[in-house]
Length: 40
Image (tube, rainbow, N blue to C red; front, side, top):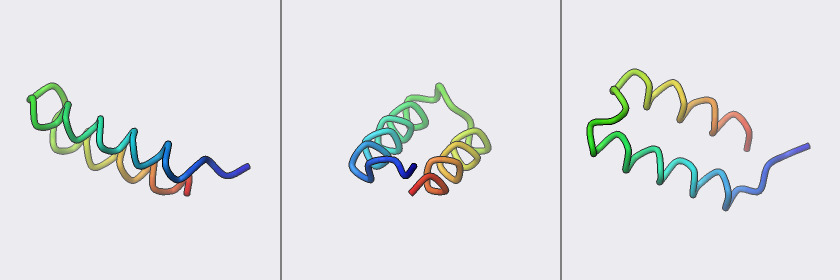
């Protein structure tokens, strides 16, 4: 089953905020973003 694209987009936005705050590394951000995009 496919995830709701709006939910995926919100999770990526939140991940971006964590990345900007320095709580997530560049590599972690890239990997997780790719995983989320793959769910679309």
